[in-house]
Image (cartoon, rainbow over all chains, first blue to last red; front, side):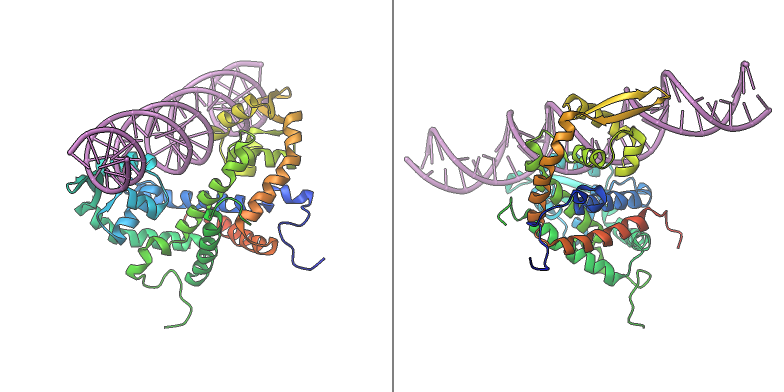
Length: 158
Length: 158
DNA sequence: CAAAATTCAATTGCACGCAAATTAATTTTG
DNA sequence: CAAAATTAATTTGCGTGCAATTGAATTTTG
């Protein structure tokens, strides 16, 4: 038996503990972020996924629903009503692409543009709440990106 | 300028990019886990949060709704209907505590107990899909636990 | 070029997740 | 001991998140 344990090895009883699950650690961290963001976003009447859409649009304005979905990892079933609420709140506008009427182009309004400067404040707030340095944050981020990529790479082809 | 960057430093434009957000990395990883679990749990008619409840009960049977909520980090508003569905599926039973009628005690049924052995298979499947060794998984897990603790430790007293 | 296939957004149905209100039971305290 | 406060679970309302369906527009292809 080599000293390099893999998931193919025998799994002890203990491994089924909540605290021993990586998935649960990720699940809990995601909820913790959500709770941390809530008070910061409430000021603007935004939810966290709505904020993600704005982040995407600040990065690249005028995207189709599909394109936004690819950026954030959400489908139109989630985005359609979400974008309608963002529009009702005055942060984005939506209109059919005249050159391809199937598509809807989402654009930041002036109000949506202006919010970007405030977003730095939100970022600072979360940065503090997370309690880790930029370097630490970057390391965790990269590790999680790898993990996500691996998980998304398809059902169990080892 | 020292070489130790913190979140109090000036934040460049680039920091508002989706890919640069730790919260988004966690958010994406959580969704990726969900997707990875789905086919494994569908066999048993379970959702991922329902699976978490069973994990908690395999670890310690006969808990109140409140106690389960503390373990998983969910409130009764989420758990009440979820537990009702778990009961309808035959995995748990619920009954009022005779010594304190406010509380409801949740217990694994035989079917719920039996599922525990199958759970090792689920664990193996996810372990493979995550593509990381037990040691790597443990490191990420510990890092995320710290992050979660920090985020939950309260709104920005810094 | 017209029928079939594809693409995109919206809609529907179901299950979280959370805040706030409700109800019932227990504990505190005046 | 009775009124007030607290506690536990349920219910309600809203916003995701996802699968599946629908409907309109475009592209492919026979």
